[in-house]
Length: 116
Length: 116
Image (cartoon, rainbow over all chains, first blue to last red; front, side, top):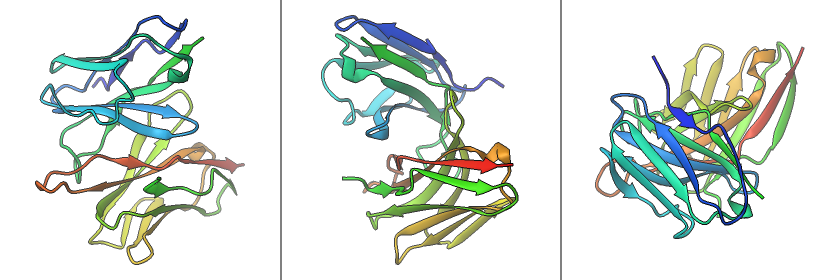
């Protein structure tokens, strides 16, 4: 049974370039989350979707960040233009419910982004 | 301001002994708490959870204790094994006003090293 699949695993790019991170959630999970992990801030929620609809994007740092979920099996997180301070590990996670029992998050392996 | 705090960035324990990881929270509205475990280059994986109506939940070698009056959780691992060496994240959740479960708020993690 495949888990959450993220690509790319590693991305090194130059400042100003566009970055697109991709995620395939676990089939049947109605919720999809994008998290960012940094040393300073730990794991912080950027945005989450329910049934492909964005529910809360208050964690998206600024307009350079955008996320889409065109269908139940695919989501993208785009940064345009990228900046060095965007360097982090970006995790996608999915869950059956919004939380509580049986609402545990299943994380992908993460996409490590380095912006030079 | 951090709503979930893990004040010990690291912990070292001898194999076979007990590991005790601590977590404090500030929001009294949190009603569900979880621990996630993360190995290097992998995403966090769910370990154990506890509802605010309980003060203890046990799963094999892992036990989570909740002290609501102190707004404090602990995760006990007994006996500790070298394979338990990982970063452990505490997370908390609250119900939204509409009754749905709110977002997970993560602590910054504690790196546990279990020495053979």
